[in-house]
Structures are given as structure tokens and as C-alpha cells.
Amino acid sequence: MACLSYWPLRQAWADHLAHSTGADTIAQGARLSPGDADIRLKLASAQQAAGADDTQALEAAAALDPLNADALTRLGLDAEMHGNLPTAERRLLEAADVSRQFAPRWALANYYFRRGDQVHFWPWAQEALTIGHGDLNPVFWLCWNMSQDAGLIFARAIPERALVLNQYLGFLLAEDRLPASVQPAAKLAALATPEDQKALLDWCNRELDAGAVAPALQIWNTLCARRLLPYAPIDRDRAPLTDGGFRSAPLGGGFAWRLTQLQGVTLGRNRSPQYLWVSFSGDQPENCVPLVQFVPVTPGAAYSLSYDYQTSELPAASGLRWSVFDGRTETDLANGSPWLSSPDWKHAEVRFAAPAGGLVRLALSSQRLAGAVRIDGTLELRDVSMERR
Image (tube, rainbow, N blue to C red; front, side, top):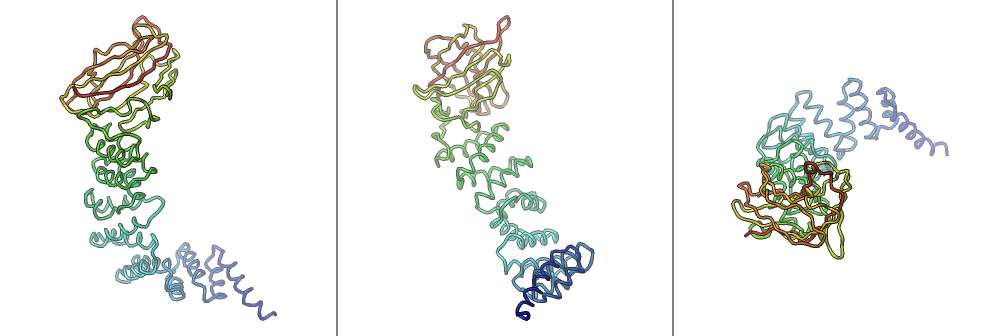
């Protein structure tokens, strides 16, 4: 019984010693368990931390476990550090061959990046992204440091994988590389799941803020056609307004309604009958815009904005009206828009000419008129539409 218990106890003591941070102590554990590759790797880590040569421990780990990608990768990096590039490349390739994980591919991409070897860098960067999870920004950063050619990076490194495209889109926006993001956004829209909706709406918002109508409209219509958004695709030549009947909850982005959170202003939807209501408490800012929608239009064409509304406790000169702004210059294209005030449902219309940029910002705006107090009352809206005349 004593003989039978010897080896388990010896292994247990070796494992205990291996949990130390000191190289000498871990070495004792390695001597007690000469066939354990993991203890050799721990010894190599401790030796490296102490500034000692860890090559022998890594070689022993690789010999004991030829399929250990961690040992092979670290041997490759050690060989590179000592200037032995053929051995470094061979070891790193062996690690990628025995493991389908991210780490060996990431190590190879870095190795070829440091060599300036674009021929071999791009395939390994793409392989790393093809199987990678978590934060992939370091890979994107490495690609942009290898080349500033957005088309090359997209073609050679970015796989057709929604998770990667989603993160890459966020990376490009954070790096303020908006022109480079059009291709990834289009590809993501074609592959998107509901989890990608926010990323694509954020991208549309950035495009619209920059006055780039066409790419934002393309992505928007793709999402609508794939039923990832609850709207019909937009026809800018006919009826470009989105959800004029307020049937869906506002998305707050893209070409949908955006509700602004303001002190003293409350908005809500009535379901039966369907209309949007906007309530002003009198504590709202003197000038505010509680409701906005960006609308794509045909440059130079004539349009009419029509709507039905009624108000409660608002004076005739309410200071509340529809404004139609040029999406790029912020010029008000509907100066003749009437104040909104009617105790009964009323149909009204505003006409304007589309600006050269092909984008307008439709805004429900409120301002305190000279000599008047801030309004305290409610507006109800329904059947808002915009049509080309």
C-alpha cells in the first residue's frame, strides 16, 4: 500500500511546487514529475520572469508534448528574439499546424508584421480573425499599421463573418475612418442579425452627420428589405418619409424618428387610434426640438410635407411648428410653416424645394415667442407624409 501511494503523493507534491512563483522551486517540481509538460511551461515562465534562459524548459515541454502549441509558439518567439529566424518561423508554423486556436495565428501575423512580409502577413491575419473571439481591435490595428490601403485590408484580412464585421465597423468609427467603413457596412448589412442592428444604426448616424446620404440609404434599405427594421425601403423620388403613422417605436437612428429627451417635454404613442402626442409642461427650454427625422430627397425636386394634428391649451401663436432644414447647411427650407394650434383635428401642408445635398432634417421645433410665456399644453400628430410634387 505504501508503494502504491508513493507516486500519487509524489505527483501531488510536484503540482504543489509548480504553483510557486520561484524558478528554483518549480524546478524541484519538474524533477519530481519528469513527464509533465505543463510544469516545464510553468518553469519556463518563471525563468523568463527572472531574466533567465527558458529555452531548455520549453524544449523539454515540446518534446514531452509535441502537440502543445503554447510551447511551440514560445519556442518560436524565443528563437526570433535570439535572431534565429528560420527556427522561429518553423516553430510558429508547427504551433499553427497542431492547433486551430487563435493564439498561434496571431503570433504568426505579428511575426510577419515585424519582418515587413506582406505576402505571408495577410493570410495569417485573416485566419486569426476567422476564428477569433473577444476584442479583435489589436488585429485591426496591426492591419492598419501594415498598410493604409482600406480596400486591401478589407479584401485580404476581413472575413465574411458578422462578429468580425461588427467589431471592424466600430473600430473604423472610433478611428475616424468613415470612408473606409462603407464596404464593411454593406457586407455586414447583408449578413446581419438583430444583434448587429445597433452597430449599423450608429454607422448610419455618422454617415448622415457627414451628409453622406447614398451609402446610409443603401444600408438602411438593405436592413428594411431583410426585415431587420420594421419599415418598408425608402423611395426618395416618391414618398421618402419613414413611419408617418407612428406605428413602430422610434429607433432613434438612421432615417427613423428620433425623440429628444428634454426637461419639461414628454412624448408617447397612442395605439388606438394611432397618433403621437407631445406634452409641454412649461418648464421646457425656450427653444427645443423634441422630434426629428432625416429624410433623403431628390436634389432640386419640389416636395410637400402634410400632416394632421390637434392641440390642447396652446395659443394661436404657439411658437410650435414643423421646420425643414437642409441636412448639410441647416438652412430652413420651410420658413412659411404655420404655428400649430387647433382644438380640432386639422390637415396642414408645408411645401419646400429639396436642397442640392439630397438630405433634409424634418424637425418639430418649439420656441418661446417674444412677449409670450413658454407653452403648456399638448400636441397630437398623425398621418405625417412627404411626397414629391
